[in-house]
Length: 353
Image (cartoon, rainbow, N blue to C red; front, side, top):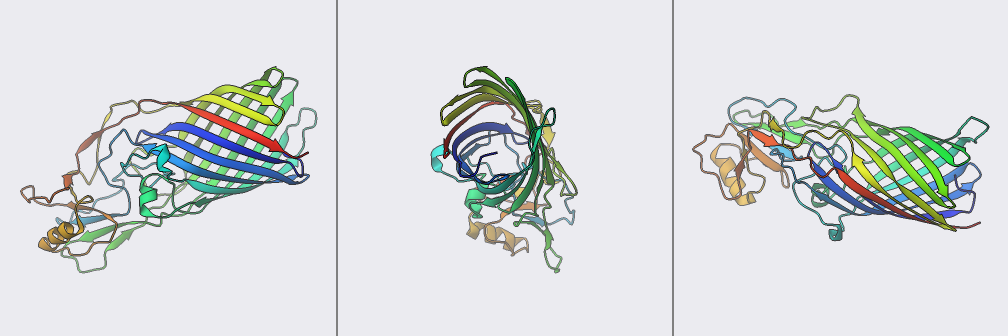
């Protein structure tokens, strides 16, 4: 905890890999915190740029997705894979200098107990995550979930001479996706069926240890992760995340530099062949021009489409000519989970008494 009137500014670079799509993410951000009272500090964070690359290829387009059904065979869940913190992620590579921003975080931390003998210090944090953008383009690049999330965490820390140990446990509360899927059955005059995507809640945990090697030089390590829980729309191969981080931390006066190697734990085997699911064989018109979409949909008696939505047609005859840009949803796809090592660098500047 910071003393009242003390201000800390941090610059962060974090590189990590995530399943089930085998994505590689580089976050560049800024964070600050300030002590406002003896047991209270305020926190703020902003991801200035987020670079996401998708070496793997899942053939089912992300939401919002219109599914046109010709043969009356309604697809059942699950019919796609999803990385929950970036639910609209498409296969568009984003570079760091593209400056696709991530999310804002606002938080308040309160110390509940100070250290006393063998009893550790205990603090509680409440945090609000706000999207920097809800535009479809930024969300498809991986900027975030596009919705407000609330988190609550409890952290403990204990020190003895050169050794320090810390742990935390938290929960993230999320809302449903704003952009839902829609099911249109040709020949059925009823209103298209909206398929709201219910997000899970997140359970966070972490354990860290530090050892002062000499002066202001510390060896540090931590294991952390999150898991989805609660009632939600099922996904194929959905997963949480677990990482191990090891490195060094150097403190010189008001500056603290931390650098470490991050290992993504328990990734699925690379190159596994998995079935696509109930949308296999559908015609994917997501990259087809609006005029060509309208023409093809009108020819099969389905003239309704949402602007900006992805589109697949299920049950289309194999001899139907597809317009330029169309493809067929593959019946199988291969996982790509190579390169599960990243780096994390943080520079902190502390000001005040």
